[in-house]
Image (cartoon, rainbow, N blue to C red):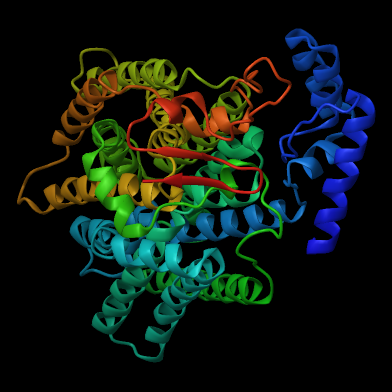
Length: 534
């Protein structure tokens, strides 16, 4: 909108309000809407709320225009492309774990340590590169960050097929390690960017759902990897190691083609942000990267959430990539383990989507919901534990149900953790908060994978670590103080007007009640700007 058009709009609104309100000298602000004008003339708070609802439903375009916010269909393209990239990146991360028997038969030098190390590169590189990668995207914008991610994922798939130019198994192994490293670096932003995309492109009532979609699609990459045994044959009578190597070679060529295609799509069209923000909070200037880190390290509640999220998510997520080994102790082979892992990931995804949508519709009870989900997940993991100890007779349906319940309710906490952390840390950038959560989580996941390198350690210890981390994660969460500053701003939960000296002048706050009470934030009430001064 040009300056002339903006002035014309203000004059037009002033004239309209003068005619309706009979010359009431009210200052022009962007918070004025048709519902507020009518309700002001009637001077009734109940009618204010009622007319707001009616006009927001009947005339959403008018309401959005008067508040300088707009929702674009392009947001679904952005979410779809990024989510598919996240799905493919996770599939590459868990490339070898779901077909461990076939890999060990095709490449005799590979064992459980090599398979675990391929996944371990994801956590190693994440811990090393999360800070510079988050800084890069925060500084250069969403498009440059996603473009870099897609290039790294594509590069990780291409280097594997380069190894086919030689018959050397050592060369193939080295190229696979390099590919895992490149893919792991890309994972730093794949796992950190969902809250940023939701804040930049989606309205308040869709933010948590958008975050959940990105996280679920990323997690469903594990489901895709569990379908690989349908393409790569397991060692059996009549199946030679060379046959298995041909299957793996064909699969890697397919992945290289998909990775390159995704990179081209991102190059062609993937904007950083819409021309007009989708919400009031997205118009607020975020703190700088350096300032955000300082504030986060001084924020008790953010540190508690980080500890709770890391202990809750790290071990179950890492366990899923090596689930074959735990199930083998219960007498399950690779094919049966494939169906357990595949079905568990699918149920995880459905749970994450339902939780994200529920949080958007009924917000304000995230902490209680998290505790309920964490207790249910712990109970399911304990059920799996008593199966491994032989306390109860092992049956197939019990294995399925215990794994389903533990992983589904555990993953359902992820979008709620992200939402609560972003709300408490606001106006720190969503990307920085997500990077902190996922970075700490990956460090704990790295410690879990390193335990596999202990000689003759077996696999029974895994369930004890699973139970211990799930139990300890609830204690820091209980100490967290909830704060919904960002949502309060977007959902208009503040007092819309205050009478000053008996006049009809009204001041409209663009900051939430929680923000006003926070000593570290000064809210600027302005008709054209929304600022947080630290």
